[in-house]
Image (cartoon, rainbow over all chains, first blue to last red; front, side, top):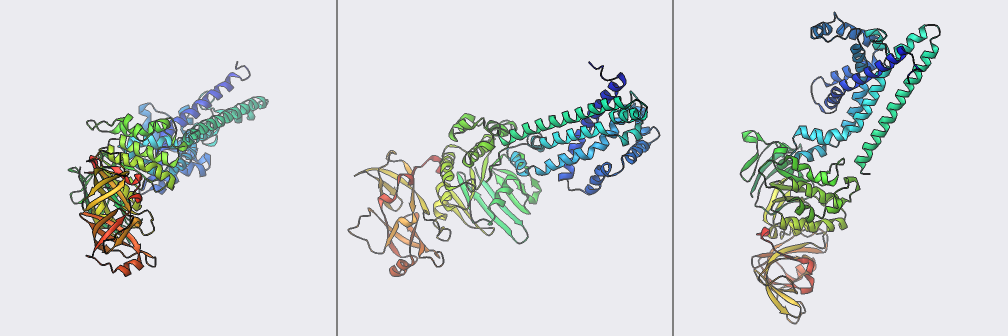
Length: 231
Length: 368
């Protein structure tokens, strides 16, 4: 199997999936935390945090990518700080994951935040009267109740991360085998004569992955909804 | 057990200023909606931080604003049955019931899960989720869930208010068993006179954020001012001792101020009972009547005369019969014709057949 894609194309597919998964899974705990803060926190600067989180949704992706380059590049303040610890983002696949994660973050937070706001807080009070400390209440009551939103947000973020183009190519360029993901690979194939068939194959792969993610999210969401509705 | 509560809290426009003590058994906080009942038990549970107050359960201080003590909800050991059940929708009944168990502090008396499950008849429901339970079933599960967390005090906030009449009748017997079989003191919030009369040992009557009357249920509920004019079944519950068989299918009971003949009882002579007597079943006479069918003629004295329900035809009269209080509902016309006034000696007539088997219940040690 696999001979219907060239080795280079396979590399791009594998890299895309890896970048998408890493970007989504690493940002997930932060996404839940930020969604909780935004939905329930009453602190100074909440609106500022809200604005920051949503910025990548509004800014041109190229601008986001450039800002990432300025901050996380080898000479950027954060990049220079992290380099001695062996953490390098510039022109590495990790940088692609960072760019994708940042671009997908607002979508993830939005979805989780909506489900947090829908949680009946009186159930959390009830857990307290049964002796559950706040952390246990979160794990046993809040988290299961927001799970549909978390799943939806994760899938959405994964799909977005897989398709991210502008910020990725600006921040980490388009290096085959290192930072060339599906969209940038398709773009590159379209730049060379006779690349259309390769581009079409990768397009089909993209569609397949996106549809698969959608189906999985639908199935998981339905199962959770049925469990809560008591089917 | 002892519970001592002093609270004051300002809601902007409404002020709660209440102090009371609960001795154990079922203590009802009774009052109209908006009188501050739920605020009080939320403060006891730790769901609300009052402006000022002190709450002590069995010597443990849960709240003392003067000493800056506020024990968080989950460390209070206070169970709570909410009006709307608040079962966890994502857990089965079994998991809901087990929830509190994980957090019960070591050393607390382990609650017998099977006994509670049997008492509330939860066995057939264990594998269902809350969405597939009826309202009455939900409340039974909520009660079981609260009990299984081994609380030292159980708060119940109008647990029957969200149910229709039939469901109420379905759940009430379970609450009576709870009162009689489980050694957990209960603070029961309600605006329903009938429920309070049926369940409570002690009543704290609340009006506009203030305690207007507190004490043994029989005494407080005989206050005509609290008597619900709209409730045809409104009654007073007395305690009596079973003297024995009186022939003709009757049993004789001793009240503090006389004898009462009721349809024959199954309980052994000597046992103590609760007797419910409806206000509308009592006839008042100012002279001892003769040649009447009513078997019970008790010497009484008019204690208080209620305000009635405005333009309505009826009025409630509180009567002293020995150490007990009865409430009779008569017409305004009779009140005027008999010239009743506080202190007047009179007779209370009660038909034996007016006291049905549902009005007689065995008295358990919990009531003492």
